[in-house]
Image (cartoon, rainbow, N blue to C red):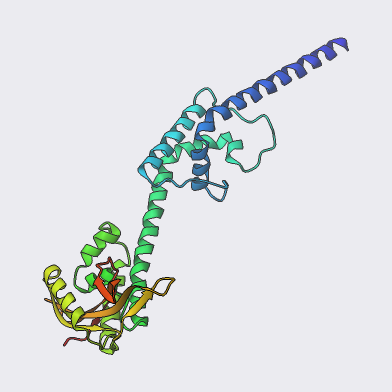
Length: 297
């Protein structure tokens, strides 16, 4: 009986020692993996979001982020195939925190290149959807706003410069649905051209001269047909004391471009700063003009 008791104590002692050693090994592994924790957390969700959860995780997109992500997971793989192979937590209870499941670390670390490929594929798909929607939105705006809303990109598509826009917006990629969206812009603009209501019917000789002289220098491919203002009077902006600061007037310029049968109408805003004594001076400004096309004249 005494021998059995001593043997039992020995078994308990060995078990306790084993648990202590296991606990120490697990603590060492946790410390060794800690510098790569962010990448491991991110990789677990990107690898299988239905199984793993992380409140905050990084989707590597820049070259620097991708390089760090791959290096971190490579380091995790090295740890799990070296001195820490088979190391498990001492506690039987573990939640779905990936940091409590080292048995999955090696699988996830080895899938690092596939994870990056998946991210790039999803990014390309998101980019494609965004750019196609961007063009479809232009077509919708044109139909809803009396032909306005083309923007510079839409006008270039109308002028046959589709590939230039594709390169600018899509990096030259031929996204599915992109050409169809371009065709919708063309159809929308041409369908609205005969219906377009007059936007500007007033004349201002000083503005007419200013625009014609300026465009003659900067836009030699454009032949101006008409310069008109939306209102006869200027809109004057005053300061808190009621003194005039500047005035503005909306202008519409109609012009032709060689090789394009439709008339292009472009909005321009003229600003003039008040310089005293009721006098104003033209102020050049950076503007984002809008465009539409009108039926050939």
